[in-house]
Length: 322
Image 1 (cartoon, rainbow, N blue to C red):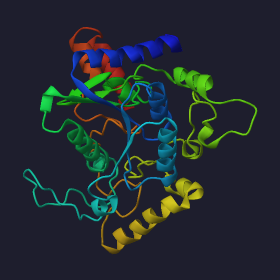
Image 2 (cartoon, rainbow, N blue to C red):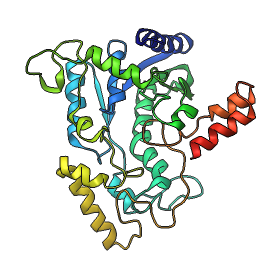
Image 3 (cartoon, rainbow, N blue to C red):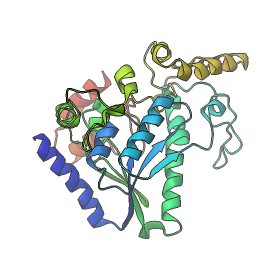
């Protein structure tokens, strides 16, 4: 489809949700990354507020960028913070308060892929769930909050298999209105809205009311950097972060030394902990992650409903695994 057709479908997705559920607030989720800025730019006149999770282990410039952009858009900003710090999670200072593991450490050491779901729940999901509770109050399912995210099928193979337009979780409705956008759509949207006038650009390139902002962190690192948990870090990523943003890498280096002094085996940021094999499902909001916790495998659904053959399913899943 053309970009204009893709935009029309994005609006239709949200319109369908608003018509089907009693929604009391629509909130754009803005990490400061390239995809989230587009979905929030697209819906900036249709949301009630913007939410940004300040994980406490991100690059400060990204949070400053979000604050400035949301202020320029004249929208309310919910800057959210996790209850427990990344440092306390790594050092094993956070204990479970429910279930069969009550009183036990929820995690210890730097996470690696196996620990990503813990980091996602504690650093991102918990603050967003708390915001939902603050908005909803005690009204339960008679009131709903919509969170607009920038998840897309084209991000990764696993996104293609797992991402959904709409995913209802009780009174919280996760909506991915640009889920069907291709990389070409994203490039065309940037070309259409980013300021290219021959002049000295304003901060964040917000030169006109319709201009698409640009976060310098995404230019340098090709990611938003709002969460540096390191679970899916690429080789030498911390060195790259340190080159551009030494103040962001410094506390991670210090935490490495602290973890090593405490005798933790997983004492290196961005490295798979010794003996770690299992890659657990990950959260909705992390572009690097392979899975999405709590969502169906769409390929399996397509196979079971006859949209693809069992042989095609086996071929697709082998390619994804490879």
